[in-house]
Length: 218
Image: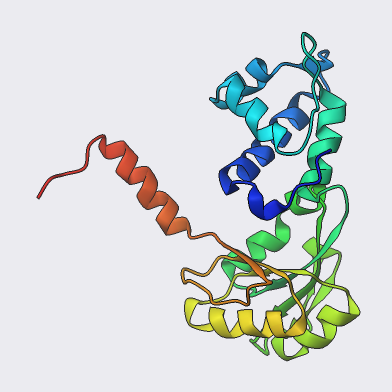
């Protein structure tokens, strides 16, 4: 595998790695043991050249005339993406979205384990969550102590927009290095912290724009 800095790899290429991995994990139980760049590209609406270029950032995985060993490529992609290990995650905010995220089983399958849940609502604090093996909700003021005690490096923010920046600052001050933000607001974080925002309304706006076909002229 190439020794290359992640900062030199285009973000779209990294996002496509997750798509490759998802497809390979879906077909790995089938009879096929190998897959070509053309087959992988066609399954995802990409060209074989794009697949080869994306993977070439990290090394040489396939063999000419044979393609990629599916099981081997799954392992390699997991190592590249960091999902060959378990990451301890804090979930902050236990509203409707927070409860849905807590119940989602896909996180653990991908190596992300929610080990602590926080909320500022005193009526929720101390409540055991059966969907998370009865983890008890903690008050947000316990965040710093718990991040250290449970070696938490990632946090999911499912809090109201007006609280998001304050909570993000608490997270980074406590030592959290990666934040997945579901609040519809941009966050300011230190340069050594990675932040990714998921704004569902924006995603729907983008879909609506594409459905229009051509934008209206004014």
